[in-house]
Amino acid sequence: MVRSAPRGTTRDRSAGPPRIEWPKHSRAVDRSVRFSHVRLELDAVHEGYRAERLSLLAPLTTLLHEREVESTEDLLQLTGQLLRALTGAGFRRVDHWEARPGGWLPLPEATHAQLAEPVSHLVRALSDEAWAPVGKAHSFAARLSGPDRLRVDLVVRRVHRERLHAVSLELWGTVPRRAVEDLVVRVHDVLPLVRAEVVAVETVRPRRS
Image (cartoon, rainbow, N blue to C red; front, side, top):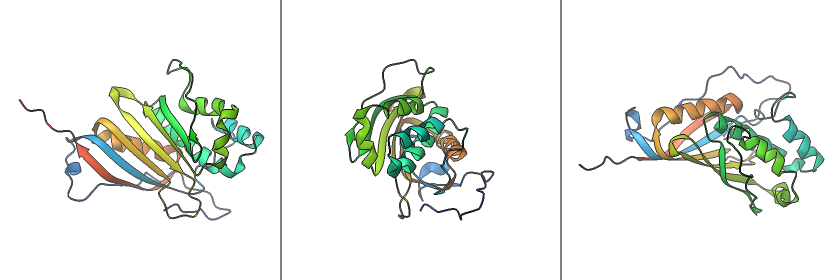
């Protein structure tokens, strides 16, 4: 559930990330287990993703106002913060992204991973008329590729006061438990979380000799 911070108060960003809630009776308690698939549901502090004036996301805020898509500003700010966190975890290549409703959106032009990150691509792409459907979107979905052949599917929802998870993340590949924990910490650093729940896991099956 997304919670609103009281008006006139300062959010406490010093609070640590929430403890990850793993599925009951799963092997996740064994830190040596590796997963082939992990699905995470994250609840964010409702007012916690607004970019500060000098944030790297400031150009995104300016662009949204220029294009008069204030109705989806919260969604895209939230998406931008999440993309920053995923970039920090090594997920820098955009394989797919789409607005819902709206459909598939143009992929970023090929470039060296160190020269442009997904947030930069997002800011650049929004200046294209092809991204007009984002203005009516209720959610934003993407697939990013990362290190060690890992992939992450993400869905960001414009939840407002609805009792829904703000973010869903699905990790695919060979995923150690520490990678899941690190990702939650990175997301919490830019997007204060009140809850992190693993709702599905599949363990890597040992190879038969």
